[in-house]
Amino acid sequence: MNLRHRVAAATAAAALAATGLALAPTAQASAPTATKAPTATKAPAAAPAVAKAAVGTTSLAAVLTAGGVAFDKNWTDYDIVTAAVLAVLKAKPTSAVKVLTDGTVVLTAFIPNDRAFQKLVKSLSGKTLRSEKAVFAAVAALGIPTVEAVLLYHVVPGATITAAMALKSNGALLTTALGSTIRVRVYRHGPTISLWDKDYNSRNPRVILSQTDINAGNAQIAHGIDRVLRPVNLRG
Image (cartoon, rainbow, N blue to C red):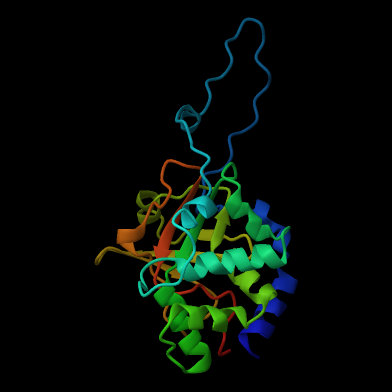
C-alpha cells in the first residue's frame, strides 16, 4: 500500500476535526480544577502565572511567507512546507491546516526543512531530485488529501512548546491535529530531541537545535526538523 492509500486509511480512522486536541496527559499538566465563584468576602483567585505574560498573535503562516514564497538552492529553509500549506489552502480553503494562519490559536508545529522533503521523495521513489521545485511537484503528486494529512501530523494544538520545555519532555506523547500521536525522546548526547512517528522502519525525525523557537513570544511556535514525520508505516 503506497503512502497515499495508507494516509487515507489512517485519516479515516482519526478524524481531521481533532484540531482541538492538545498534549496527551503525559506531556501536559492537567487543567486547574474549577473553583466556585468568589463570595463577597473573598478576593478572586489569582490568574495562573502564565496568563500574566503577554503572548503575541503572529501566525506561523505569516512568518513562513514573510519573505515571499520561492524555491531556491537553500535546502535548510522551509520553502517546500510553505508551498504545501498554501497548496492545501488553495484547494481546500476550510481545511484544518488553516489553523496555521490564525495566530490566536495556541499550537506547536514541527516543520520539515526542504532537505527533509527531498529525503522523503527519495524514500518513496528511489530518486534524488536536485531541485526544490521538482521535490515539491513530487510531494504535490501524492494528492491534496495526503499532503493535508501529513501537514496536520506536524501540528500539536493546545500548547506552545518551547525548545527548553521539549528538552525536559522525554517520553511525552503529543496528540497531533491529525488525531494520531508522536512520542518525544530526548537523548543527553548532543542533546538530541527525536520524534517517534508511525513509520517504525525509518529513522525518526530530529529537531534541528539551531532552528528552534521560531516565532517565539507568540501563541504559535515552530521547530525545524530534519525528516518528514510519517503518520503511517510505509513498509508494514
